[in-house]
Image (tube, rainbow, N blue to C red; front, side, top):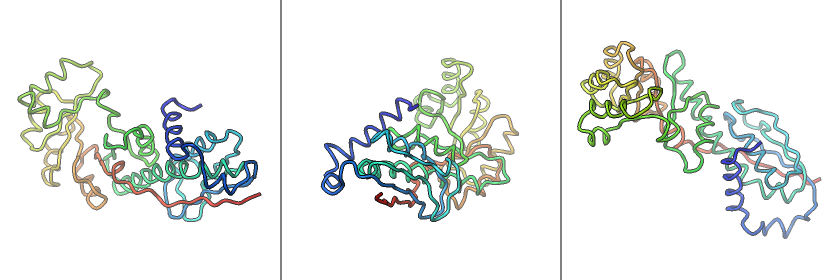
Length: 278
């Protein structure tokens, strides 16, 4: 059963693309003509959003038969069949682009996430996403991160406290900001503080922060932060994380590494759909 958010998103995407009707298809394809469509990978990828793609086809025509040979999280090679759909050709053609848009975008996120996770193998570090997501797509993009082996940071401003530099400036100090958060929120809610120096790290821990984000620290400073903290609170590395440096960052001993690029810079993977008339 579709969630309301997903149903609205699919409907909006289809309305955006189809509008008052698919002029090209209506000119060329008979309304009841039958056929098949096959979505195939054109490069190695980690599959994500396959059920979303199926729901797109069903939103256009609930009578379409959709076969999914692979599940989310599967590694696919070039040429692998990802989805097969059979039924009215006009409906398949109308749904094609929207289904591919979801599938390519979400699989791109899962594929990039898996690359980051693989680079940190053998360490304690977990790869996290951020709130740098496509507006309206956050629940899908964060799901794609999980499919790729990553973990979700807070979903929004409402489910976690993350005190950043501007909050600290507004409060007057790290201590004041942390105390205000601890005194105003439920004891079950984690309070995390972003710091840029080792002195700020010490202040955040002394103030009672439950976790600390190390913002744009170099490797040496990060490793020293891990040594000084001695496991008292989880440490999260953030800022400037790339596939080239994430392995070294993980070896410093940090617990978490947040990567905005997972969602704001993931490339849509290459796949295509071919039609076969009955």
